[in-house]
Image (tube, rainbow, N blue to C red):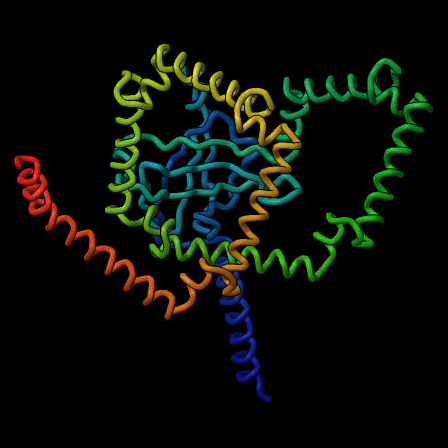
Length: 385
């Protein structure tokens, strides 16, 4: 290989390495020959933020911190000005948020920007203000130093003191052997109760462990659901009462009628009202009840009338029973066809004969009634001569 070719190859390697170095510098350090947009943010403090720390927009790398400057100001929140160099223009809304937060557990910082979503943009000329988001250690320190945490520690200390004292309920439970034995007995009793439940012999045990009982309850729930569905659909009397406006109106009218009846009873109109409100009617009812009592008392007295004699006099009762038996015997004989009455009732020939006799007697009576004026005339004539 001649010397000229070696020089060319060496030049290519040299300029290639230089180009690679330039590219790496540009890519890793965000070096750009074009002017990039900048914004300035006011902070109370920057909590260890340094120039070159990264700036993120919603978690996406968007630039870096190019300058941190302190300036005297009457407002504490305006004394630190941080200049952010952004890769692209960023439209900030009125609800934007800029905060300094931890980039790693080693103490590095970064700036996180939320541009916001409000329809109004950030007013032109109004400075951006940021805040510092506390890390976990700072938050824990604030919590430890807070009054609430101190109150919690005080409460825990008081609880521990109560545990060590036999005056408290929990202390007695831990220190008093009698109370411990009672609690242990209660636990054992509860354990036996649960064992009985697991056997499924008691009603509650069957309710929990019996498949048959579960099926029965499920069936009952289904029936209730079916009834509720029918009521909701307006089926049956209850469904009409719930869903039918006409039935509801009728029920309303019936209730109104009952109310009117109650008003009339209360005001003394009608028989029921007199029964409830009239003292005279009440006295009459009391007198009637007393009279009924006297009647029943006489009914049990054999010397106070025929009813009392029939009920209380054994001899008269026996005679009455004998008469009833004789009448029953006569009726039995008549049904069997024995005697004149039986023939008159059950014998058709006797019935026809008796009917003919009645007809003849009726005719004779009519003839006598018609002949009565003639006989009277002859009696008067005979008396005249």
